[in-house]
Amino acid sequence: DGGITQSPKYLFRKEGQNVTLSCEQNLNHDAMYWYRQDPGQGLRLIYYSQIVNDFQKGDIAEGYSVSREKKESFPLTVTSAQKNPTAFYLCATTRADTNYGYTFGSGTRLTVV
Amino acid sequence: GNSVTQMEGPVTLSEEAFLTINCTYTATGYPSLFWYVQYPGEGLQLLLKATKADDKGSNKGFEATYRKETTSFHLEKGSVQVSDSAVYFCALHDKAQGGSEKLVFGKGTKLTVNP
View 1 (cartoon, helix red, strand yellow):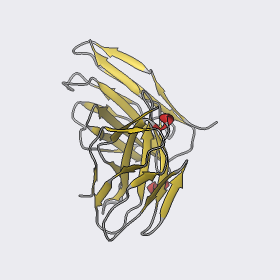
View 2: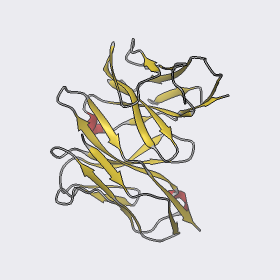
View 3: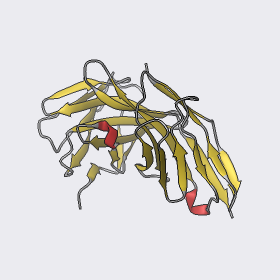
């Protein structure tokens, strides 16, 4: 079955460390997105990519970085510059026409220890 | 820019009660509108959508009608079940002049249904 795989499901980061969250899809969707979810805050867009080798900043890109070397993969790196990284991170994909709506992964919960 | 405003929760209902979750939007033109549902510890799932004015989206007993006059897309269900307990998000399709496309989400409304 086609879908989105986010890994790991839970991730613990020490202060000052960079960590990378994985998002892989086999839906053949063109666009991929990373959102951050905090309690009571809804979803906030971090980065998105509509084609391979191209990506744009979202509303809260500071302290994060991404790459899009393959259509299937859109990893997110949370750098040490992100001061409050504890959150639930969601990856989503869609076809070229976003009227189709998004398909979401099951998320990664990142905790700073 | 385009935005979505949802009623604040939490909403607590008894089983078989009628549900309404209000959603209004601000947008240029008539964007597609969506409702998503999120169960605890999971990602979001598309519940229903409407792509043009006066369309009604429906799924699993939930309905929402695209009202351009009131710029609204309220979610309704006639008889809720305990299994409907979740967080519900309203969203719209935003397309910028440069061609980038994304969904803009409301803050979510948490629904709890008691037996």
